[in-house]
Image (cartoon, rainbow, N blue to C red):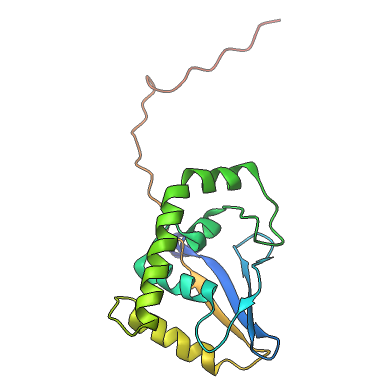
Length: 175
């Protein structure tokens, strides 16, 4: 039972992301790590008095559980040019191409929610953005704020196998 719980926990682990303030708090940077892979870094962006773009994007995507936005694709193995320390791979680029329309739609959706929140209009992600803004504003320069992109295990339907449906293996040639 313990082994099963550990296996489920390991499969459900997500990408760890650390956001931190640089340049006396005027800028934000982040680095991330997927279990059993090398860490990688995003671009540095303006911070100002509000949430930095990538942190706001993280909050909206995770709150609305949008799997094909920037953070979901990054956690699934996409290799974006803007991410340093992550080698561009054919499967990582293909993932971006495959989900390009959803990625663009998610970006527009995120921008709409963030714009509504900044205008103090109602949005279902408002409370999550408010909470993250409070965390971000309380974060001292030099400290780190950790968040996690949870990757839930995907269930693959199993098909019963019978001897008749198994591929035959060629017999060894006799000598």
